[in-house]
Amino acid sequence: MVNLQAVFIANAIGAALMLVLIINNRINTRNVFLDERLFSLMPYLTLVQCAVETLSFVVDGQSFPGAHVLLVISNVTLYVVNISFAFVWTMYADYKVFEDLHRLRRRYPFVAIPALVVIVMSLLNLFTDVFFTVSPQNVYERTSLYLIPYAVTYGYLVYGAVLVLRSARRAKKYLFLPVATFLTPVFLGSLAQLLCYGISLVWPSVAVGVISLYINLQAEASSVDSLTGLYNRQWFSRYLAAAQQRGDEPIVGVLLDVDMFKQINDTYGHLTGDQALYDAGQLLRSCSGPRTVTVRYGGDEFVMLSPLSECGSPVELRDAIHTALVRFNAAHDRPYRLSLSMGSAVFQPGAQTIDEFLAQMDGDM
Image (tube, rainbow, N blue to C red; front, top):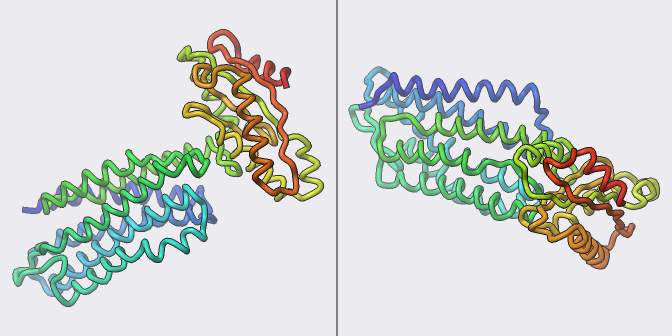
């Protein structure tokens, strides 16, 4: 027995959340980049599903003229848009990690095959029973094949999550993609509706997941430098202020700047200068431990922060950076030879200010 009032309330909440997100996204985002465009599709797809799912529950079991056609079309739409949402999430996660359009063009025609199969099978349901059947009394019933789109959808969602969890560090980027908070409500809502048809939880749950994703993307935009993918100066200040409040263990800091950066810019152009900054950032991340963070402090200045118990001492951290620098120059054919000036200090939370810490590193450079 379908509780239409509960269906209306749940999907209305989901739709309202997506409308707010769509309006806010249109105001604050130009959707120039592929990841922005892919993300902007998610609230639209979710909004469509909230509306169509409500329609499917309303016409289920009704006998007015056209009810049968509406029930079939609405459920076909649900299957098609459902798998489309999962596929868009996978592409979005991949591009956020690697930012490689060629990778998408090379891999995703093959990754798309299961989604295309499900879409074709869903469209066939307009003419014959595939994933569902509609009885003469106009009642929707799932066939034994309905597990196929669920399995493919879950496969895409899990694949995107694995990409983020396994590849983000290898891609040398700090990401605020909240895989757990995005997927948990999606999985719980879809599992509940899978087991108990008649309740409406999938798309309100997806709406909650998309909102969570959006909130964390805003955190990423305010905390991560767009050129290097490293934390920025604002995040650096918050990190040390939090360490002050908690009374954390001493933190080793190394302040670095790219030698002769102005000369690189003047000689080879700003694009090459940007490449030098990117190289410096990735070089620093390559020699960092699990708890070490790298910050683009501003311009050609970087800061590495590592708990004293992890890096051993300022000298050991500087030696690790120097070794990585020598290795980089030997392995990469750049028009410039990357060189870094370094100054280090130990930050004692509670015993000194952040400005004093920065002054010590600067003085040691």
